[in-house]
Length: 99
Image (cartoon, rainbow, N blue to C red; front, side):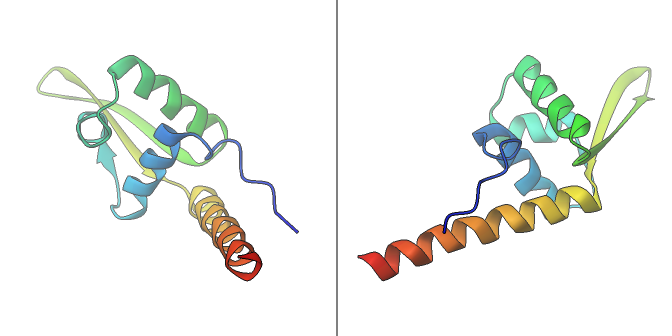
């Protein structure tokens, strides 16, 4: 009856990162850090997990001799997010029917 929730997305910070990237073409690390309130270290770890899962592309470059990390969501990431949201909706519908 209940679909398993994607363990990669079932983390508050990783879900926040993907949610932000669903609405923009790409985002800089500093923007994501500011919007999520995460520490740089934790954000870096969570972005790596999303990249390893194939949900994000990460581009590293320089701007005015300073490192610049830019993230964008992949089609696999968009699909995973849509499935995650659908699974949550199904949980809610079952709860409404039962209660």
